[in-house]
Image 1 (cartoon, helix red, strand yellow):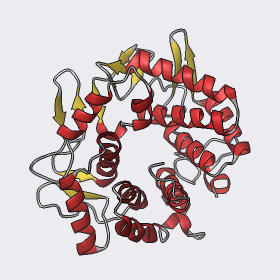
Image 2 (image 1 turned 90 degrees about the vertical axis):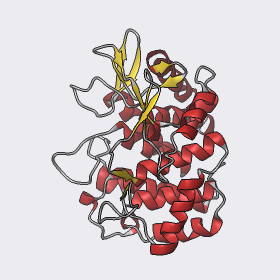
Image 3 (image 1 turned 60 degrees about the vertical axis):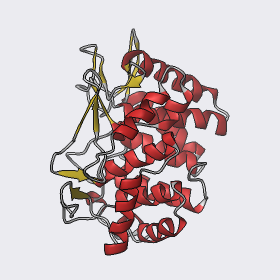
Image 4 (image 1 turned 180 degrees about the vertical axis):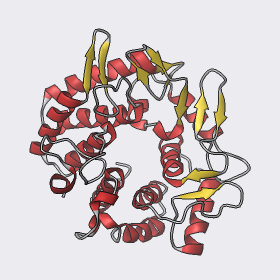
Length: 310
């Protein structure tokens, strides 16, 4: 389906399956590489690594960078996408017995650490033209795979930030950490994006080995009461802030409940996941973002193979 709907004639993955006004994101290729490794498609994986090298990598005297979007004007990366690509290349090197993947992963990680590591934390992005890095860390960008394996990264500091990000007035997390002031900010004062909240909650579980009690209680209560999740919620009265649901939300919620060993909730969410549009052959893929499509397909495979938290 990816080849038919999202891939152009150069092998690049579109953010939407349509012609015109599309973007080719490092987010998309990272997600696709992770999925291809999971389903053991070595041939397509190799082709996508070639696409990555040709269209996204920028080699400078001081490092090798990944453009967050493939354009001639792009001079920044996105650390969350770099994390995913580096991690999957390392795993693929072992799984497919291809040393070149490990060499590329090491090259990318060395650049990421040298340019974006600040007081033990990896900030959101780096601009290699301006030679300037971000001063903030979006908590939804956190990825335990790098944090747990790179000795230069301060795991304890990430754990502290995640635990302190819990907002005592609501079940939700504060989404942004500013490094210089060492303070937290809200991405939006009125509402939260549930995709971001679930991503933070998942990293909270993975890095602290604890369950975020307030968020966990609210998430279960919301599901028990309504049998659905919306894409966003108001911070004050916890009511839906948007009228739509999200396939990625159901995928991430399935993943979250498996991680906290709530098997009954995980199974209920997985059943909802199987009814999402990425499983509908007649779906309008021009309206389905590749991010949502890939999360649904990936979590379904992880769930069925019982690989979550492995």
